[in-house]
Image 1 (cartoon, rainbow, N blue to C red):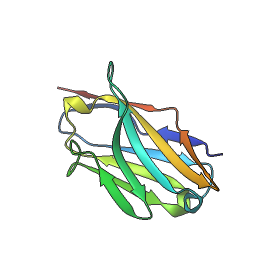
Image 2: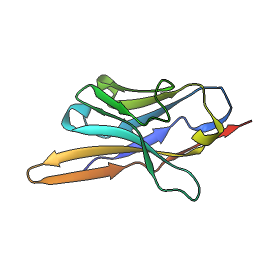
Image 3: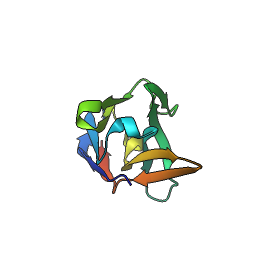
Length: 118
């Protein structure tokens, strides 16, 4: 089992920056993949960025603006968001994927609200 606690969301003006944090209840080394997803009102949850064994993947809409990183000592994953746009407004969720034997398990955080204003 993995418990995830996100923080760092808030209200920011367009063009500004925020850094989201996701603290895991167990070592990042024991987690196969971690990622950030977001869900805007009336829309489906979508992938923002993932990191697996140091390899990163980003949605086209955030490439060049967002950076996902890991601090293994703190069991924490970050999402640095720069040049924020109105369309980045959403609830951002952290996800951990653990492969155990034949099973693949997903764990989600509670979400943190990011609101970008004009």
